[in-house]
Length: 152
Length: 418
Image (cartoon, each protein chain N blue to C red):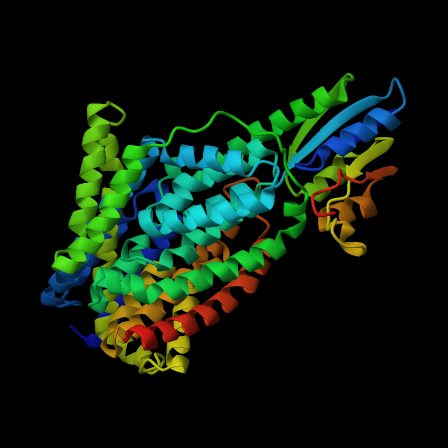
């Protein structure tokens, strides 16, 4: 049995804990992180706006992209350590919700955390990415509540 | 020379210069096309040599000023100023992404205002991303704050943006008076950005971050901070004494350059490179080409479009026109076209142009439709920014920030006198 655990900044510890509790012994756990194009793209776009000053070596877009890759690797390592069980790690780059759905193809379980507004009751408790994944996941989904945030 | 041919030639060359600046064929510096284009216009008589000389005389000191600020910002980075800012933010915002956002807003606004928007985009943005990642916070709200503020927060001082330096030269305002009139619009525009970004990225900010303190206490690069502070004081002093504030920027850059060279932290070549010399030639040439377009008939054509006077509706009309133009042809040529048309109406009209060209670029990706189209065609990067998200954010921020900051400018003009 393959269990995919979606590791996202801020909410991942709850997902790792849920996987530890609910993934049957002997199942293959895969920790998945997806880097969205938003941050490197915004940095690149802002640089393209500096008409006349653009030298490729100074473009912050690629630098942010490589920082993102390093941060993702670090996050996956921290998640693997918290899990404390043998596991695989996968890093993908692209539209986050679509990549998660694609990565869950063939898996038996997908673990993810609520990613929306945790301050109020209502449908916004799932953000757009979480809603898309829950709607389109090709396998059963375990939706967990992240740790409580301050003010709740 | 036949005047309609001169107009056709100058418009054609402007399109060519802007097109090449966007596409950068074979990786050429923009000046490779712009300088010969300006030469052709002077040689064919499409622009009177006296006008070309006047344009060059006006632009020369302005771009020298910018070069000094670019060098100053790079040397501050070499001194570790931006790294120290990142370490400080990481320590005090641990576990609280909203607090990090407030800090990014404060820092990006000040750095953009003092060291120009180039510093925020090139030097601060990667530091902010790294800081958010180190905290385990979602980086997007903070990176978007940086890129948006590099435009919006560049309203305050003449040195914050090349567009400001151009307007500063044309407006006849002193350094302190310019800052005084723009302070309120600057604060209002940043306030609108903050409210909108905080709501827009509420889910990302709610996700939380690591709470444990990270890293050692950062060492403050005191020398760089004092030099920047001294340079700022120099701007004010030079303005009071009637000296060009560019000298203060040059002095600040020299102080840090000498220190960097003595400590072998930089090389003369690296320092000269950070002044972006081909860029200076490009701006000079672009100024002459735009002047030829304006002289040969665009001025007459646009005069009907540019509202006269400095009443609130006129200021609003000017700012909206400038924002639209900035989104179509980029803010630099937009300001070059609009300055000669608005300068006769006084500093209020010139500052309204600045509100438009500085806030407007946040409406479309990279602040220019031309750049946007090019990026859609070329797709040189595998992962593209989510244009829908970027545009939605721009549509929420730009109209509100533009309207409210124009009102703030109008209030400032009434309180301080136009």
